Image: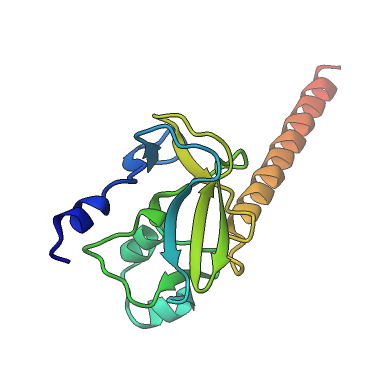
Length: 173
């Protein structure tokens, strides 16, 4: 690629940068207004493999390393979907898309590519988000599990509160 126009044109449609997220850690933040139905990102999907945590531990992968890669890739309580050819020196932007049920980006699979499109107008400064529950990782259920666990904990605390209140009321009479 020796033509100066070809080199410069690659940088024409940069829509976002990595920045502080109001949702979780860091995310993709729009640097320009992005119109609805704009292709904002493409990512190869043919190079991912689901790997059980037990396999990673068996191969002596440090637990801190496992916890770190879980921040960047789709995972559930049993394993993680990892790129087959991972370049740790060149992290892909897709790793920084945070989850929201009020997402402004949708995805579709086309010829071993995941294409990400804005599903509404996104204003400069807004974070790009995707709904992980919409088959983002067909084998991953982590977000459903976390939501269920939060509900279960809520009911446990509610039960304990009612029980303590009942005991206090009984002992006062």
